[in-house]
Structures are given as structure tokens and as C-alpha cells.
Image 1 (tube, rainbow, N blue to C red):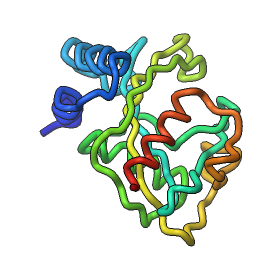
Image 2: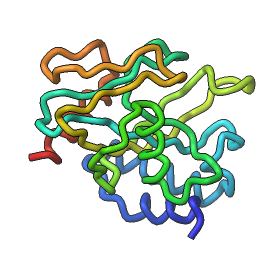
Image 3: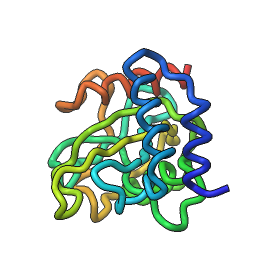
Image 4: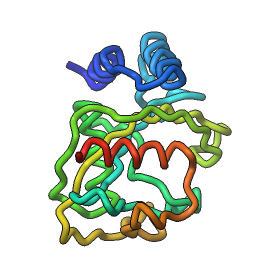
Amino acid sequence: MTLHADALDVLRGWRAPDPAEEALRRRYVAHLESTPDGMRRSSYPDHLTAGTLVIDATGERVLLNLHRKAGRWFHFGGHCEDDDATLAAVALREAHEESGLRELAFHPEPVQLDLHTVPFCGDRGEVAHLDVRYVAAAPADAVAVVSDESLAVRWWPVDDLPELEPAMHALIARARAILV
């Protein structure tokens, strides 16, 4: 199965938690059905991305990265690459690369869809990232490393988070619910 076929399979089968994300799920599926390279950066103005929110095993802290280009705190994520076999593999690879953590208990099903425009994803203008978000738990003693894509990587207590996009708060709440 190709990465494209895997993503279609995952998104066709995913049960959205609310009408807004159901509309996104339908948009993502329609995009992939109509765009053979819809998983790649070459797909303009929309392409799929995937990422992982890393949370500690207690659910009390989340690991976020201060994105180098955006200058904001986010989960770990990015673009699909040629060696990626599945959408989940994209998300997990990004978590490994951007956090330096290898021992992650990865939840294999997406937990959130989020569409956001990115002005710095090439010279063609704004791009819509059709982001598929997963969750992984890290061991209590996990020590993260800053990658070239980040200005900083930091554990944040869930009751003392930096300024985040509203969707990030929802993602954190869903991650905590998965751990219970």
C-alpha cells in the first residue's frame, strides 16, 4: 500500500469528534481523491502534513517546540517524505526528529485534524496544511533535544502553558483523555 492509499484509508475510516472536524475529514478525503500528489509539498495550494503531540505518561506535562519559522509553540510535525510508508509513520518520524526522543508510546489513530495556512512553506505563497495529529506518551525521565527546526523544546505543565492556538488546547485535552 502506498502512503497516499494509507492516508485515504485512515481518513475514510476516522470518526470525527464534532461536525467541524467531520467537514475537515471530508475535505482531506476529497483532496486526496482528486490530487495524486496531495501528500507532498509539490501539491499546491493544499497538502497533507502529520504530527504528534508528546505528553508525559502522567498527562501533566506536554513537550512543545518553539517553531523556528513561525516563532510559536506547537506540537511536532511536518511534511511527508519519500521513505514514509504510512501517515502514522510521518507523525512518529517528525516526533523523533524534532524532539530527539526515541522511546515514545505512540497512539496509532489520529486524534485531531487541523487546517492552517502557512506563509513560509516555499516561494509560491500561502499553503494550506491539512494536518493530521497523533499523540505519543514519553517516559517520565525523557530528556528532549532541540533540532534545527526549532528555537527551543520544552516541557510545559498543562496548567501553565504558553500562548497557543485554540486547536492546540483541544489536542492537549484529547491527549490527556487518551491516557486515562
